[in-house]
Length: 174
Image 1 (cartoon, helix red, strand yellow):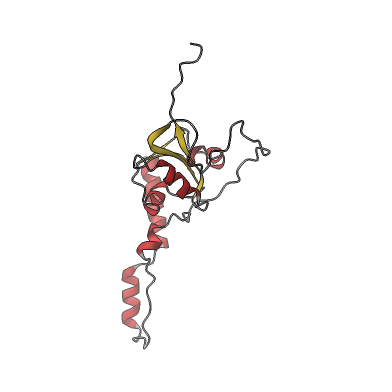
Image 2 (tube, rainbow, N blue to C red):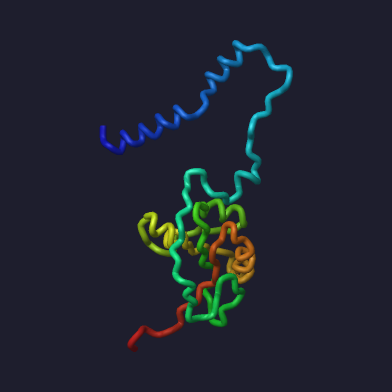
C-alpha cells in the first residue's frame, strides 16, 4: 500500500472513530426508556452554512510586521475610483486568514469565478504574509466600483479590495 493510500486510510479511520455512530445511537436508544421531553437536534440553517466563517481546522498565523511602511501611491483599498482606466468585470481581493473564497462569493452574491492572483506554494510563511489569499474575482461589468465599496465594509472577511488598473503603457525601455 502506498504511503498516500495509508495516509488517506489513517485520516478516514480517525474521522470514523471520532464521529458519533448512528447505529450506536439507535441501539442505545432502543435499550433505554423513552424520554418524556423531546431532544432537540442541532441543525444548521442555510444562513449559517453560507457564512464565510473561519474553518475549524485553520490556525491563524501572525502577519509579519512591515514597520508601518506606507505605499508610495495614494491608498486604493476600498476606493471607488483610481483616476485611471480599470479592467472591466474584475476586482482584486485579499481575504482574511481562514476564510474560504467560495463561501465569500456566495455570501456576497459575487458571480465569480475567483482565481488565485499570485502563484505561490501554500506554506505557513505565504499564508501569514497573505500571498495565498489574493484573488481576482469576476464581477458584473459596470459594478466594479460598487462591489469594491460594498466589500470594503466587511473587514471580517475582506482584508483588502481594489479595482484593477488597465495597463495602457508601453513596454519598458521603449
